[in-house]
Length: 414
Image (cartoon, rainbow, N blue to C red; front, top):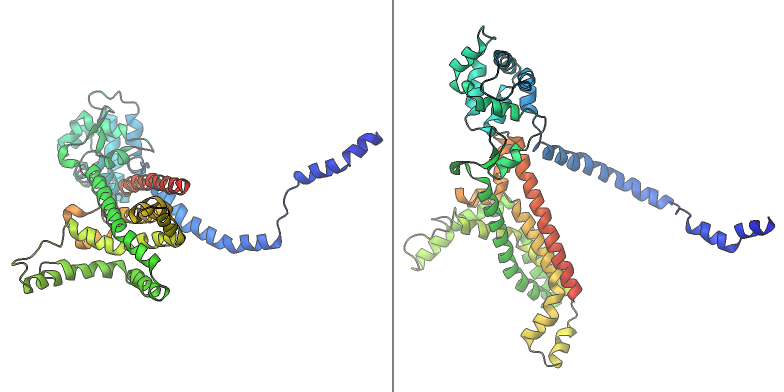
């Protein structure tokens, strides 16, 4: 027993207990947590919770269930063939009358119009004329609009009778469900969102490439400049940050329009006779967005270049490397992280741009953020806006992972 107690209280046991001892939290750590708590709470309440609620709207299907509760319940017993029984017609007439009184008719119409264009008119016309439940609801509804006599309408209602739906996400990629449940493409005249995403990515990539082509040499000049010039050059780079995006975008109207400063100057010099198409097109969008986003490309690359020792290029030259080869093999790999960071910043910011394309671009130059704002503020189609925003968020996350790996691989190669 004495031996066992000695072993249990010996140096090795003490070291073992110390290894499993939990770290003590000091007052400074509690104070730091207390200082961070308001910021964390504000971030959760003002950013995380609203964002999650908005994203949930992309799969929420509360409008139909809330406006047509008894109709949906009656459709559960329908076999889906021909027309539903008279009881279901009566329940629809009753639900539409209640929805008109409670003000839910507009929401129901907008929701059903997503399933089939024109359903909003069907719902609003029927709900307006349906004051009470008629004696023969089937005949009365079909007389108001003959579409109530088509089984496909009722099949779509039953198909969208759940609390959750994929209709918004299907619509955001130009797809829809048939009354039989199959996923098909929408008609060619209704295809819009896939082309919008392609246009958004094309503009964002173009702006990123232009900013990189201009920003890399500009950052090199900054990194190589003497100390007395660095302050002035940085001032010129950061000057756009001191002016709002709206003002900067509006200024390009003065420069690029047909009677703007550029066209008038070129005509005065005799270079052109008419006016160059510089405004309300893709060129104007690329120029204005590059002007706004260029500092986001320059500053990360400049920070990476400042970390490269200046004597490395001289050492490479002393070993026989030509300046282009020394730049490509020694200098460029050490700036991969800055290039990745700047490209990521510019690309992500360009994906969500709304003001600049709306001001200087034409109808064919609007990006997906314009339609997200349209569906959120004007059409009040929050479900479709949420689906489009979710897809844009997923694309942003994907590109973030790709650019991050590019930056790590560049640093690893160095």
